[in-house]
Amino acid sequence: MKPIQHFQTGQGMTEYIIIVAMIAIAAIAVYQYFGQTVRNQTAAIAQELAGNDGTAAKSNAQTSATSAETTGNTKNTLDDYVNQKGK
Image 1 (spheres, rainbow, N blue to C red):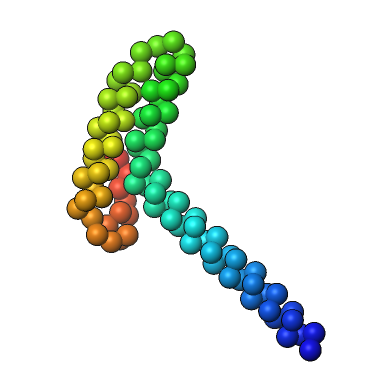
Image 2: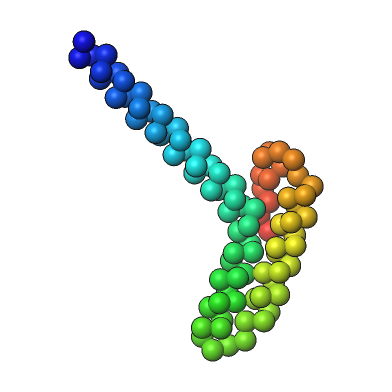
């Protein structure tokens, strides 16, 4: 009877690994979708903290957000989001 319990423990670990992998893939997709916007917002915050004007970076973040919204409204599958770097 002990080997059966051993297999059940392995099954639980496998399910956990699959769930973690799915979360990682979802996080990559979200970062791909919002990455440029987040980078520009971070740049604006860094500029302001340094005592400089962060208006240009803030404007770039808004432009990136609008572009991401347009892309999100026109794309229907995950395959469409591949190689979106720089868009």
